[in-house]
Length: 121
Image (cartoon, rainbow, N blue to C red; front, side):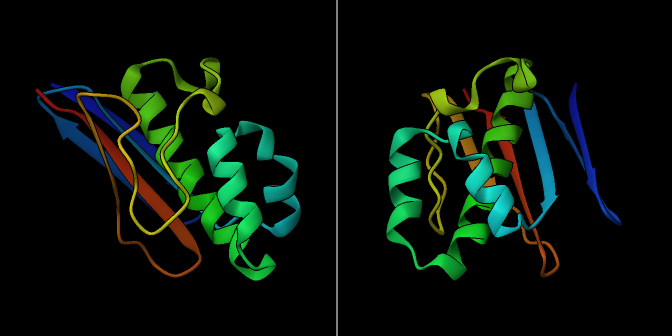
């Protein structure tokens, strides 16, 4: 059995699965935080953010961040692995970062973003 745990503010996420799994939940990034952490994004994700209106960038950045962190937790590396290596997308639908992995956004209250990553056969 594999598990993952994440918490932010008053939210807690737990995942249990028969395969490697990762979860992450975060409060929405501020504009300043999103700009300061763009080096953690894949080049294509940074390009996607640059095309968005400024008011949409914090939510798009946070979506990408929770997807990345969930995947890296599932890999078992966490942030030891450079998050910029993997493309998960900033848009409304995540992209699988590697063959054999599925990433999904998780519905959470406004002001948060969350994702789960699961190794699939």
